[in-house]
Length: 186
Image (cartoon, rainbow, N blue to C red):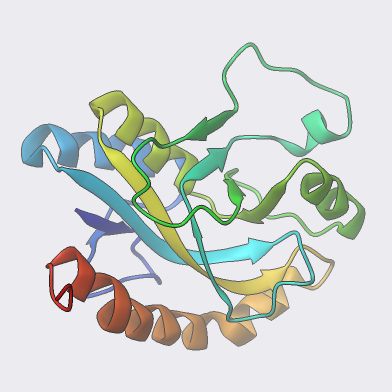
């Protein structure tokens, strides 16, 4: 099952699950109860904590985090597991994707996230990995970088969003969908 956030990020090959941690978790759980997927693949845009990643670069992941900025600043803790990895190797693991309902706009915090081996942020991915792990299915994500986690992150996102969606659509249709259907394996 291929999923996306929805609203401004829709693809003809993916089911929308909602924007943010809560909507994604609720709607994806409902889909998994009804459909019983063999795998979950999330497709969407992401901000990068690493300025070495270029805008519009495609990045994959099977690891998600839910680390709030106050945790990075040493001002909070959690008794919950805040980094999850999906078993099964659905995609090549390139980085851990942090999920929060907030977008980072501070370059120093971005450097700290990178120091903790977290490369991207996307609002839904932690929910996807959490639900997949609960249902015992492999999961992964394919992301296109729209912005860096700096002061003008929102402006970068707006400038790059349409091109990122187009690049994701083309990438999925050329490389991912054929391999999921077993095409080109000979």
